[in-house]
Image (cartoon, rainbow, N blue to C red; front, side, top):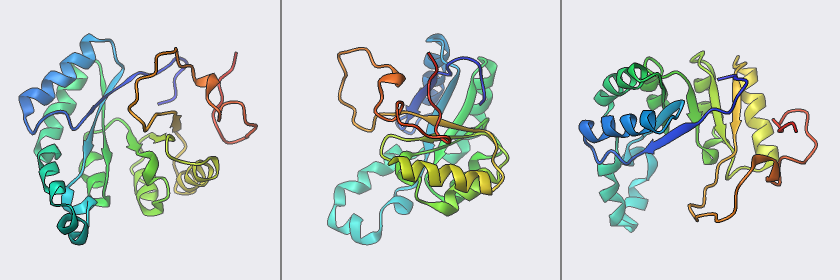
Length: 193
């Protein structure tokens, strides 16, 4: 994903409501808005939550409707590319990495997954660029994740500053205003004025 300009990725997430037509509409909206890529999430509730967690919180079962049907991926990737968009999904299991690899232009790892070494290694071994979200990770965790990816052969790593809190920010947000951007580090990407 190396680029000389900012890359804008539309987060389609799980807003497809289980429908291919709606998912394609999200891709269309991303293209119409001028994004460079569109990204969904690939997970299964049973992979995310233990049986004990599901028993303790029965409402978790309703999240099955958030699951992206795996057979949608080729059509979504093709549709995205027909609009000049790159396509990806965030994997939330090792199995999901294998499903995503053939159709994705890059892998994207959620910030709370940066400690999952096996997921990082498997993403690196796809040969695709890897985008790491950093919103819930410490600087030390980010550095270990980058080292893990590099050690597994990934040379195209992008760090993405993301906000894990969906609170609306009323003031303009610039990456260089991030608390991490002014810390000295030879490994972290910092903006240049």
